[in-house]
Image 1 (cartoon, rainbow, N blue to C red):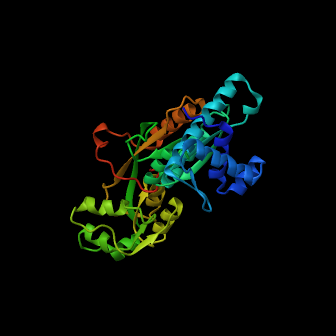
Image 2: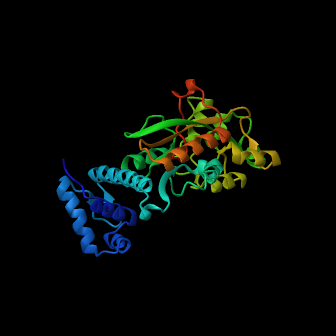
Image 3: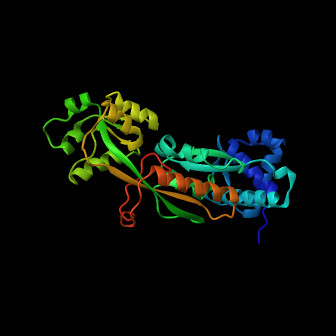
Length: 317
């Protein structure tokens, strides 16, 4: 069996985290040459190139495997140190999590504030969509993720969180101007629309849910890549869009927004995936995330799991 020295793997993690050999050397208080030698030694032991020497560095497929193993080993090592009462392990646990922008803007931060104070943990949040969230789990960059995928990443367990509800909304003036007597799917296909980014297909899917033959949302697309900014853009009349119910409700009550298809919405199933590790801090956070999601999200019916809509802005995602 190939032995991978722990100090070499910590060095690899530092290079990945900092992006360059020089920056990793500064963090580790060693020379850049020492960092380079340790990474090369790992590559010789594995017989694989682990890093592409770009700026910032990029992991190869083999590098992702080693990094994932190194992070898991570091987490288990820290827990063992805590149980043994080793003083230098008394600092907080580091918990990297991938989460979609809408969850982050509506309920996820509330969950983090509910983690007991006697559980010392530092959160490192990665805001990503569902495809990249799965990649972050596979690469070992995060230990857990809010995702729209019920299919577990290798080495992970998955549990349902609930349904995030989106409402198609616009300002009254926008609706009056752009949504006339034509069928709604046609009007929405021609009206300006707000999308999160070029991977955001939520608006297109909603239009096609009205009519399978509809082409999707309009060609006049405004890209607004933050959850709060997305809602603000719709409220400003820049276009229509699917807004999380929690963000849309107060604007609907005030009359600033109107529902474009009353009674119709798009429900996105969300899941929590995390490594199969016996790490107490991760177990506690998992319990708090699940309990908080149950308060803010709609119950997910088992029959709906097979008909998922890809979530926007995830780790949805």
